Image 1 (tube, helix red, strand yellow):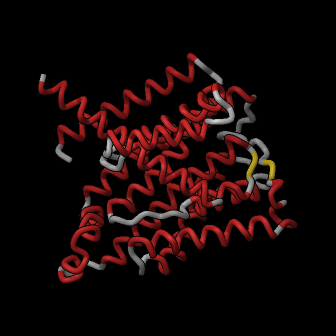
Image 2 (spheres, rainbow, N blue to C red; image 1 turned 60 degrees about the vertical axis):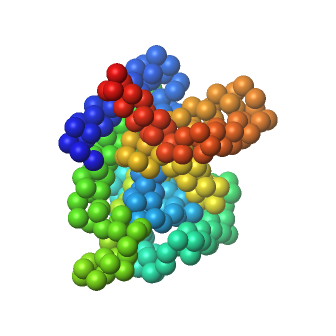
Length: 316
C-alpha cells in the first residue's frame, strides 16, 4: 500500500479507536462486547496473514482455547493480567510452531482440514480430561490484578478494554509492517507463484511457517483476553464452530487491509448482540443473511465498502 494510503489507514484506525472509546463511555455495558470484539479481531488478523498466502485455517480456535486454558490454569498462582497475557500468547505461539512444522507442508483444502482435525482432537481432550479441565462445565477464572492493582468490576472492564484496544492498534501496525516486508511479500508469492519463489532461493514453507506462528500468537492474545473478560473457560472455545466464526468475521471484514478483521469483529458482535436481543430464536438467520449480503454485494467485505467510499470522496 502506498504511503498516502498508509497514512489514511492509520488515521482511520485512530478514528475507529476514538469511536470505540466514545461508544464505551456512552453505553458502558458495551465495554464487555467491544473487548470481546477486539479480541476476536486479533485472532482474525492472524487468519488474514494466512489468507495472504492463499491458505485458510478452519481450526484456529485451537490456539484461542489453548491460551484461554493457560490463563485458567495459571491465574490461581500468578494472578496478574500483564503476566498472564504474554504467557498465554507465548504458549500458543510455541504450540503453533510445533503444529506448523507439520501442517505447513500442505496447501489449500488439505491445510484447512488438517487444522480443523487437530483442533477437534484438542477439543475432545478438553472434554474427556475432566479431572483437569472440568469438561463441559469449564473452569472459572479468578479476576487477576492489573499492574498489581485489585480493581472493582467497572475499573477492571475498562482496564481490559484499554489493553485490548492497545493490542489491536499495536498488532495492526506490526502486521502492516510485516506484510510490507520481504517475508510478507513472500506470502503473496505463495498464493500465486510458489514454484518461482522456490527458484529464487526463498523457502515457501519457512515463510508460511513464520506467518503461521504469528497467527497463533495473535490467536493466543485473543484467547487470553477472552478468558480474562468472560472469566469462564469451556471447551466450546476450541470447537469447530468457533473456528468457523473467525473465518466468518474474516469474510465480513475483508482481507484487503489490517483494519478489516477489526471492522468485521465489531460488526459481528454488535449484530449478534442486537439480533439476539430483538429476535432471540432467529439471530443466526440474521447473521447468515448479513454474510450472504456481503458475499453478494460486497465481495471485499466491509473494508472494501469503506475503501470505495473514500475513493468517491477523494474523487469528488
